[in-house]
Length: 383
Image: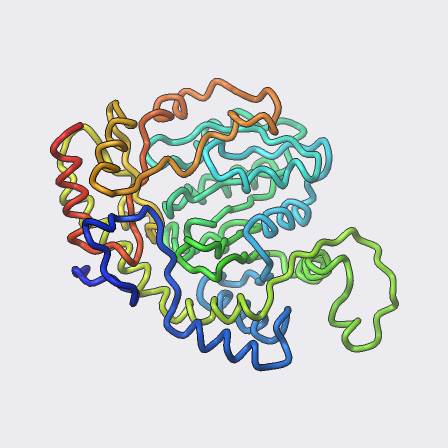
């Protein structure tokens, strides 16, 4: 049950201070974990990274292996490489996401083929994905927008039908389930982000879940310059590098913050779900709708974002809320608008239909039920 007390220990936000769109949730035990780390031998990649990988695997990955890295973007880059994506290949991906989903394809020289969205979830539209599969397609990349899981059953079936790899960008959705299974139990590769404002934060960090265990050791080498780090530390490394690797490892300082956060993540998700339920109950104007639910017969949504779609006048609504010291934003934008992807603006009618009408509302552990009620009352008044 959500209350008028914020989950974290920071002061209650007053109406004068306003309601920020995002606020990091730093777990109570994080300071002690960092202090312990800074007092010991390992502050880079060490035993706490190993512990963090083990805990995430135990909680969220099923049989997939865990590879902790410096960011969700690092994890995506490694996922594409391990999936066998090469220069000239195509990856069908959602047009609506943080650019981090698709920029690593440019590192490789692959082409992002943008698929349309399902306007009821903002997730990738499976039917449009199948229409865009060609002989050059190597993988499908999907994003659980705001925490709402994609249709993993349909995507998995497509990948089996066309012999493709499925890469799940679960940066928004740690803890999400589709038909009782975590994303890492469906996809060949699943990435998580622990950036500052994510459900589980360590300032910055990421993790790659790998379903094919035989790829884990290669992933470890690519994470660390192409070097077999265990062999090097054991004094038996043959002193050669045969793969181009990267500086993508997580450090023990970040891992300690993450370990503390894992102790509170269930309560954080419950708080966010409670706020989503309040928004659903209190937002009664017919001029807007909320994307997704906390749970349905098909999925569980950890509710990283609460997104509404309005009939018109998004900027006017944003201005009205801002006048009451309430922050809102679009947060993510269609990627085919960016020059880095070339002249890729395509006819995506479902993305077109909501492009000017979606808006993200505050939903985090510094927000209370009273804040949600006030936000909804302001929206219900009209704009």
